Length: 329
Length: 75
Ligand code: SF4
Image (cartoon, rainbow over the protein chains, first blue to last red):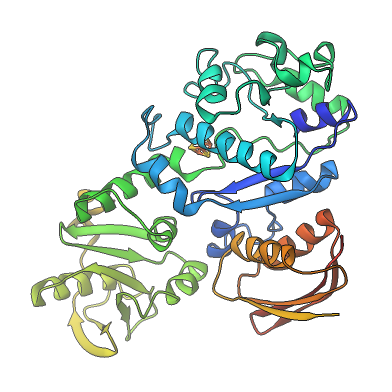
């Protein structure tokens, strides 16, 4: 937001590009969870573009992103976030976009030293080089700490009016935001991507381990954002809705998965991934009962649906001690 | 004036916005696009996207969880 404004202040026409990888925190989570209902749902990048008065292009990169996440040349960050490869990929896509749309250079809001992996002084040139953007990549907020780029050399922008921010402190950014008159300043600190989240990454690793290979579809990664995930046995996993919004969302997958619900008591919708033996079904039913309002009851009636066929299980819910810690993914 | 329909039901944001964007690229100034969606987020996101990209919202209705938005393509 600040980088864009800084360049617009120099009279340059800027348009925004937002890449949708499938792991963006935006959008879906709002749609899924009812929590924070009072807060208006908004897409941050659209909001920022509107504040700045620029056009925004949202690009679906779900398919191409798979290779970035599955085979990152530079490895992962603290969790499954392949930040350096991700940045290279996005700048590369932006480079392709500017060529197709007749734009001259790319700007990003990166600041040297702000993030441990992708925003170090030594990784900045890696992004410029490997993306193929080279001298056409300008970082207005820390340009003065970096070698001159094409837009500066050509005089499209005035280097003197760019910035020399560095390090983890956000104070200079806050001051600049104030100068620009931004009262609400949204700068997520890595909070825009599920891959930086430990519990999300653990779920993705679990999915890959269970499948015996690193691969995913959009539905897989959507479902990792929703519900309580329990793996009572290596060969099956349960996704248990935690509230009404999640329940509604999981309803959409009813025909793809085996499901369980409690009939005698109100309870969540549970999706089951895997092939279950008769004994596994009884265990899954007891777990389902545990997460229903009948958790203290003697007996709970659980209905299992599989490809239109229904089965009924009359079970005693497991106690909380019987839900093993290691089942939680 | 050409009128087109886009089915973006069961897609979650920002996918409906992306579909609208890609569809509008193929349409001409003054054409109309009617888009059907189920993610309530579209009631914020599609109008916001249209405002910043110069398209006009004719109507946006919620019919029992199915949202219909009518857009006139701008330049
Ligand atoms: S936080 Fe996510 S989106 Fe951002 S650079 Fe890292 S992997 Fe990419």
